Structure formats: C-alpha cells, structure tokens
Image 1 (cartoon, helix red, strand yellow):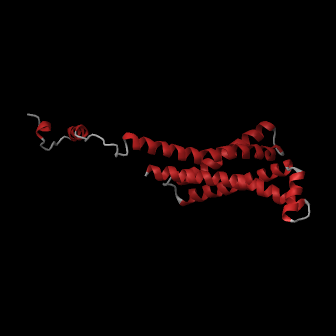
Image 2 (cartoon, helix red, strand yellow; image 1 turned 90 degrees about the horizontal axis):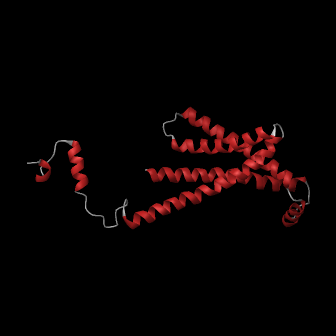
Image 3 (tube, one colour; image 1 turned 60 degrees about the vertical axis):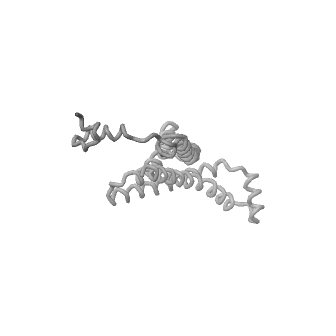
Amino acid sequence: MNDEFLGKPVKNKRIRAKQQQQVKPASSGTDLFSGPKATIKKNINWFIVTVLGIPPMIISIISAVHIFDFFLVGNSKILAIALAGSFEFLAMASLVAIWELKSMNKTTVLALWSMILLMLLLMITGNVYSTWLNLNSEGVTAISELIGAEMGPSVKRGVATLQGAILPICSLTFIKILANYIIVRKQ
C-alpha cells in the first residue's frame, strides 16, 4: 500500500509537499491569503500605494515643467525637455534605490545621497527660477501687505523661494514614504 494514504511519514520531499497541500483545512475567511478580509486588505494596500504615489507624480510633472524653464536658459528646447524629465526620474530612482538595495556598500550609498542632494538643489533652483519668472505682481503685493513688509525684490524672492522649494522636497518625501511602505509590506 501507499505510505501517503496510511498517514505514515513520507521520505520523498515532493510527495510530502503534495500531501501537505491536499490536507489544508477549508478557509474560514480569517486566512490572510483568502476570503473577503484578504480582498479588503489587498484593496486597502493598493489604495495606500495609490494615495502615496499620485502626489509625487503630479508634483514631478509640475517640477519638470518648472525646471524646463531653467534648462532653457542654456540649452535648446529638445535638450531642456530631456534634461527636465531625466532629472525628475533620476531623483526618484536614486531615492528608491537607497531603500530597495540593501547590499550596497557605504561608498555607493554616499554617492547616491550626494546625487540626491545635488538633484534636489538643482530642482529647487529650477523651480524657484520658474516661479520668479511667473509671479503675479498683484499676488506678491497682497502677500507683502499681509506680512507687513514693503513691496520689493526681497518679498518677491521670498515668495518664489517658498513656492518653488516646497515642490521637490514634498515629492521626494512622498517617494521615501512610499518606498518605506512598500518595503515594510514585503517583509
């Protein structure tokens, strides 16, 4: 007779694995990998990933348009478009790489952080420059009245810096949060 049907231990690993698959109890809905609770949990995870992923994508597109103005100062339109898009994707990829690749040595991690900082500074500069070019003088006047400062280049510079610098910082922060969430979910 076959050892499988008698309940005796089976020495063959393949047969033992097949036997264990056949003996699984029916799911009561509490198992994380089946039933309605698992579907809800899966949908919540997708919702969280989507909510954390959409803001950096939108901000990156806006930031790329802003950086386009900055790169247009020294490049043709085609090169400015390519550079703006490349810098946005490179910043996201570098940030995700730091948290995703645990086998990197310290020199590579330091180089990646250096690249992220340089790209962040370039993105901030490009966003501030584009914001400076497109500031509405009526809005700047209203802000200078609100804070009680005289209308001048310092108020315009402050508004441009505040509006331009926040975009890449928010984008990279959300990408970091999303990467951490995905990594924690994998473990």
